[in-house]
Length: 141
Image (cartoon, rainbow, N blue to C red; front, side, top):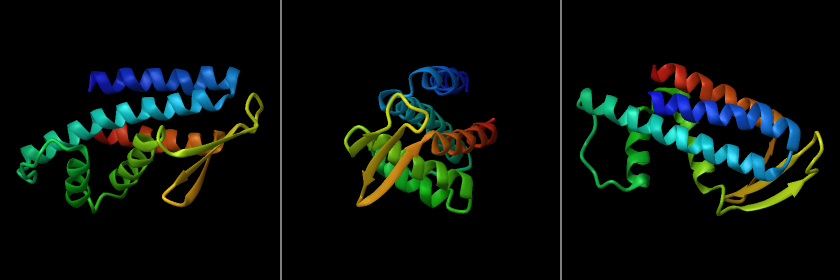
């Protein structure tokens, strides 16, 4: 849990300080990657919890297989399902097509094309993601 808190502190610094002063898409991408690492650690905690409850079937260590099994186990929990969906976006963010808009301005926006769907990642969207991840971390404790 300490590692998750450390990642959260780093991500919060990017969100509240770096993004406030630079407003670039590079900072947004770095923030999303930091959140991905944080969710990775949370996923490991969820897997440990599922193993203790004897719900986890042994599978190869492939990340996608773990994700599919977690979705089956926690399908009734809307928060975890939402976080796993965000994780898929954050995981692929470097490979996806991106368009940068209004860099160095208040309306900084990163348009991401994920599976044909255009996602606008702006300051409001980052705030939503931050609140979701805050609830997720609280639920892990």
